[in-house]
Image (cartoon, rainbow, N blue to C red; front, side, top):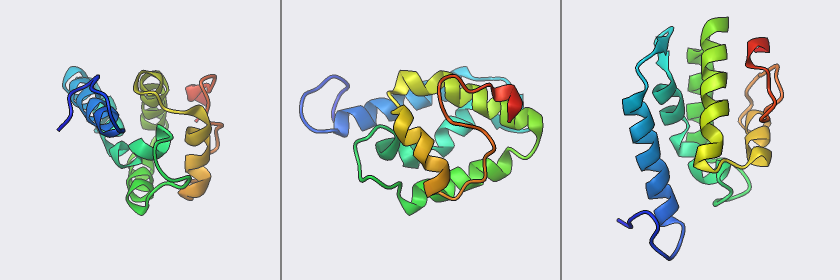
Length: 125
């Protein structure tokens, strides 16, 4: 396993992403309708390479399955707002490409009524 900051291929960034997610999950204690910020970020781990622009131009089947499961778990307005705020605030620190995040709902057939970008008003979800 590569250490963060080591040279070479994309393995270090994936390892770093996993480590950051683990730390974030440990730091998050507030839950809304049984979905914590850590749970939301963790659910999208299979989408990491797509969202970081390191993989194919399409998300994997596992990524879409995880995204669809997260979408179903966030069944109330309060949980959707919490997940939206969580992902909006954590995505930049992980290096998520906005263009890729915008594509995920349509490519994974998620029915979302909001635009995915850094200016999203999560209270409107």
